[in-house]
Amino acid sequence: MNHEGAPKSEVRRLQQTGGSTFIVSLPKKWVTEHGLAAKDHVRIEWRPSGTLRVIPEASSISRRREVAIDLDDVPENMVFDHLVAAYLAGTQVIRIRSNSGFSRTERKIFRKFVNTSRGVDISSESENSIDMISLLSPSEMPLYSSLNRMYLLILSQIRDVVDVLGGSDKEVLEDCHEREQEVDAIRLLLERQVGQILESASIEDSLGTSRWEASELGKVVRTMERMGDHSYALCKLTLEREDSSQLSIEETPLDAIPVWQESIKLLISNFRKRKVSEIHLAKERLSSALVGLEDFETELRSSSMEISEALFLDRISESLRRICAYSINMSEILLNIQSHRDSFEVSSPQLGRI
Image (tube, rainbow, N blue to C red):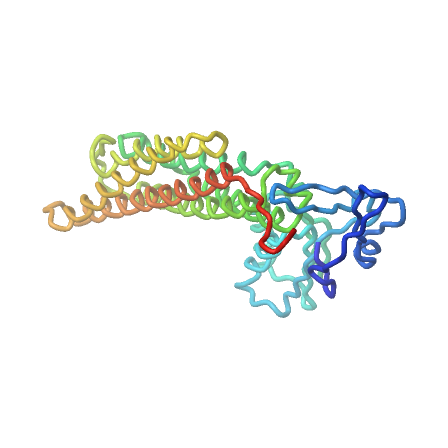
């Protein structure tokens, strides 16, 4: 962990002792900041890149990240944004203060944030101060499990849309807002975890994901969030539709849904396995479906269909097209991850060195 005033790197000379052992001294400031003393143990890890990492195994000092938010300096419409920013920063304690006390609206925002985030609760509260604490350890929610949960929620939304447009009762979509909120909550948790992996070597180890891969997974999270936004839009469009005629999943635009379902299933499964051919297949299918939806939207503009129904179908097609496009982006990110997993480093002596 970097601290204010501490240099980010130092160059130190290797020394040889005993004829076969090389040693390098550790900066005194680093040793004292971690509560270490002579004869204490540190762990030396050899990273895949060839670098060594020194971990203060016997440190007597525990640290936690805190953020203080003074609501006297924050516009009311920005309070939720500040809370989310503190959460994404990996903060364990959020201290909220206000000299004038908290309004009813602000307290409603606090409740919304606690319900939206994962593992956050109010630990103490008074008229002018509230402390929130994160109770969830990063390692308790594996990244890939959370991604899979996000995928299943989006999948269920779209499956229910198909059922309702095929004649089922609209009540199956009545909880679509709650499912959308859960998708957002998982997205916040994943972005928080990715940030913690990038910053902390110990969290990187506990979650079993390298920093490079975590950075790519952050892109996947944002891509899936956008898919979630459009699956929610499909739910709202379906709930608001006044026309009671049924739509067939075998006809455009709904015929793109089975293609997407099969393709996204292949992509999700390839977070754990390594079948690049399946990623290729998924991208080809999604690209074909996307072209079909674009052609359908073009034809709608010259159709004699009733305006309200044509507009409905156009908006349905647009959301499905964007879901396919985001899934294509996801396939490209997966190829990046697979290429990185399959890559290896080759060492060669530098010119001029003996």
